[in-house]
Image (tube, one colour):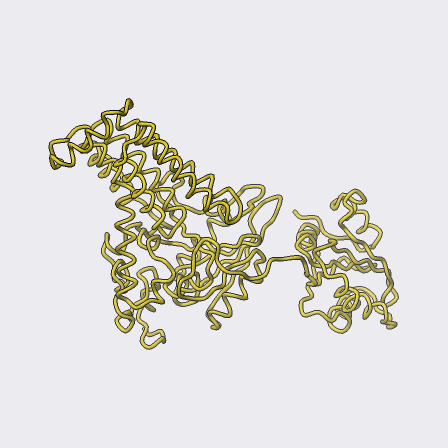
Length: 491
């Protein structure tokens, strides 16, 4: 059972002194004053609360009050007539009041009352809304999520100005509580999806969850699955599109990204700009991404397999060039491919960690210098360098960062199979991976749906149909609200 406040102010002060580790915790500001003939105390965290706001709308009105009140009547008078802020709540539980205090609210204690007042006067330093950093915008809004949860919810309400947009506030973390908002559109998102997400949030039993990436790992169906089962986006317009298709999103305080669920493999190949382009252009770019994914996954493995185990399958002129280029190389083609892919990933990671514009310049210069030096030193054949570069470009074409990581790991696995067993090994591992992906689920929904198993769907999977033909919502939507005609929902 949670401890509650006492009636006397002195007892409550001693209780809070113990819970808040006073006076060691110097960030807690305490202001004693009198109001309505009672001794009062104002508690807030320095830096999370606007001191001028608290002085103008809390302290000054209450200190000017000369009417005498006692007990619960004093609490009602302070909340209804004295405190001039939009949000004022009452609380009797000590842990809940302290949690609100640590999230930036002011806490007011009155002598003779076991109820405290919680006043919203949050005004802390924050980053303003900026452009997306990882999801490049070509056509579409140039807004991205930021760290404060309230700002992100404001962006969602502005994009979807409907009373059916539900933002359900929850908390995760046992010791360090972090606010999470579950957003969905009532009537479009199935209730089963909302209930399942709520259940998984309630069983997240870590002491603290700092960041949406950790939360996504706790929410996914299978932590050992090869592909991401939750899609992360920093664009509010993309998050809104998920809501309109019957999915739900999670926004976490302190994280500039939204988690969309459930998702399928096809969602990971869609880029936000696809919907803003003409359907021919969007379809063409999706096909290019799929080709890039195939190159990233299979090209090194197939090249090593054919040259090592099946050279007769190559044209004689190409085979002659390969043999001549490899005549001065002392290591095997398999070892050479592993080395080059490792160097390529190392350059990519180093370029990512170097701050600012220097990162991209460093990656380009390193690739040019190392590639040229390796060829001149006789350590790498020029054709393999082209193969590794093409596979790297294919991984960069994938719009989802987690998906590109998964494909690069699958690339290494297929390369090992091809280097040890040739094309039969590549085919065997490919079938095993396909079976594993086919068995995956996202929030209980099949990962390869709506292609397999077949589902009623909108003509917007790989090929985007014209907008006037997209009369259905996504297959994840409530089946009674899938039809939409001229922007209106229809049964």
